[in-house]
Length: 224
Image 1 (cartoon, rainbow, N blue to C red):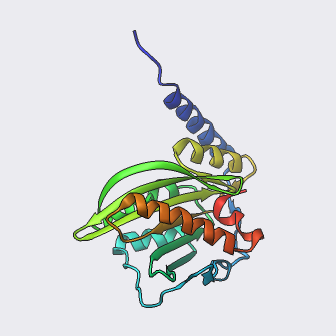
Image 2: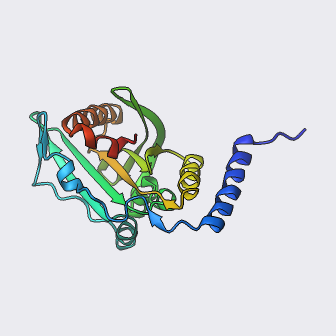
């Protein structure tokens, strides 16, 4: 007896519908053609006991990865914060006006692997901020002696999207109104051989960061 994979069938149906919508409507404008906000100003330079550590220089992406970044994102904020206990967190926020294919192009598993990292222990979890649930991806990136636990999520339009079906649904929603969704990558990572402790630290850092932002700007990172 054959069994149907209803999830795959649903994805296929949405893809066909989205393709038909794209042919009929041909979305021509992004949700924010010119961003009226600056993430360098929106993301606080200090909050609680966290401050920017200027002594840490982020790893420069490989040229092909950087080319993808330049194509997909118009604003990139990359900072390392340190607290009073000497703990460090690396934060990257990358915003782009046209995110119609960014999710499949810039998954962090692919990005880190392109820079020579081995990717381990990929999982999906939910973080809670006030009444908001944030679906995130967690993974461990290893290259030589560097062990880097990573927590990240991706927004498209007005929501956090985790997989292909969610991405297609947002594309369809925006396509029906002749728009192209904007979106962003939010990534937090640290250097640690204890992933469980690191991920707990990420969760606390993210909550403290969001609490330190202007209330009207929080939705830009976690959706409406």
